[in-house]
Structure formats: structure tokens, C-alpha cells
Amino acid sequence: MSAVTMAEGEETKYELKTAPFDARFPNQNQTRNCWQNYVDFHRCQKIKGTDYEPCDYFKRIYRSICPKAWHENWDDQMENGKFPGKI
Image (cartoon, rainbow, N blue to C red):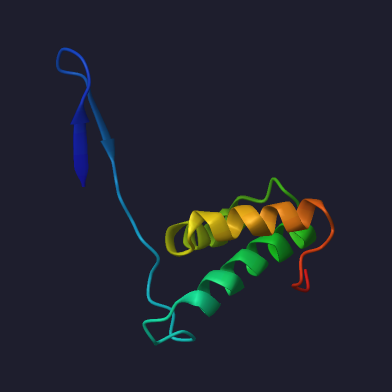
């Protein structure tokens, strides 16, 4: 756990985490892991609704391992109805 000192003794604590090991993707190349977590996040939201907090697990994972440009591009494709995945 790390801490950042703010002003006059105020301290904000935060915890840095990364994606846990996923046995489905044992290799160094995590492209499929990235894709699958992005798709799982959107499937979860479609089924459970946007306010369903456990869906955020998938979002944290794909944001941790995917290059930002990839998921920004996929978000644009989702908005335009041109996303190639099955959601």
C-alpha cells in the first residue's frame, strides 16, 4: 500500500493493483485477455444493467492490460454500431 501526503499531515491512502493471473491466457501475449475482458464488461452491463457494480471488475482488468488506444477505438466502434464482437 502506498500513501501520498497532501497538506499539513493529511494523508490519502490508495492501493495499486493489476490484473490477476487468468489461467485461460497463460502466455505473455495478453491480447486475447484484453479483448475478452472488454467484451465481458459490455456483456455484463447488457445483461445486468449499467449500475451493476460487479461488472466493473472486467473494466478494471481491460483498462489495466489493454493499450488505451485500443479500448478508445472499441468504444467508438460501439457507439457507431460497428463493433466486431458479439455482445
